[in-house]
Length: 322
Image (cartoon, rainbow, N blue to C red; front, side, top):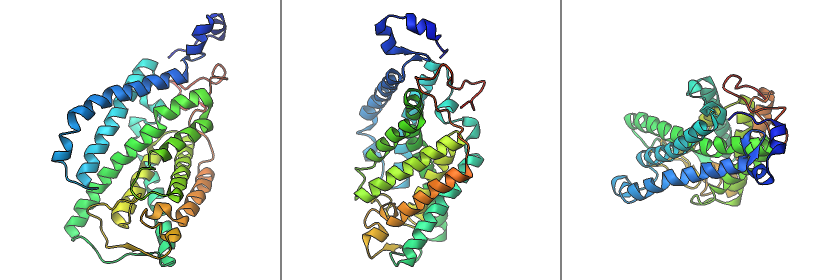
């Protein structure tokens, strides 16, 4: 949306200043519009499919149920974001999702980070006798089938969870508060969305907040969500399928190993899995420090309504403006 001159803002009636800032409609009102769109799109889907899908889909944490559920949820957020992009005369790239970079270098770099970080956690759990690989649980053909199936499922999980938490929501809050105050809010909401996961405990919730901060830093330093989406996919895939541990307290149908967790729940994460292990806390903190070092320059815009007139929101012509 075109910027509004400061002099014209000052000349507006007082009631208009509540709704209009230097960049047009203020962030809070745009967020309310976005939330209203989410509700308006999701409600008819819920009532039309809510009774049908449970009868058609298999029970439990399966590839099919995750693919269908996450695809629908991501679709709702994507449609709402496209409407806001049209309304604000912006692009999805400015909300952190440049389609031209889809599954590109940043995505696979993030995936490598996610799998390596998880592998360090599992290695420390194994060294402390809190984790055992066990034997293969699947035939070679099923390993390929479920490996690819869960990769697709967790790609959709990454797309939905990253875009809903750090897409338009992060962008709009950033324009009103600045990047890191917005990141604190989105990280808290991200953790709140996982509290109801089966078997979750306070250690796991603290870890989810740290992971959210890590992923916000990835957004800030890479300029978009593709690193975070790749990280999210690989970490969940490694947990649920490759290392075959609980993922937030849930066991996936079709995991590769008959792995087991044992000993102290502080080391193993107990019924929650690696996300509630103290090793996860250590690795995530180390990941935050390393990420900040490897990606030293901020690329995601950090503007607030207090100084938007001197640091405008990036336009399509200059998407890298900070």
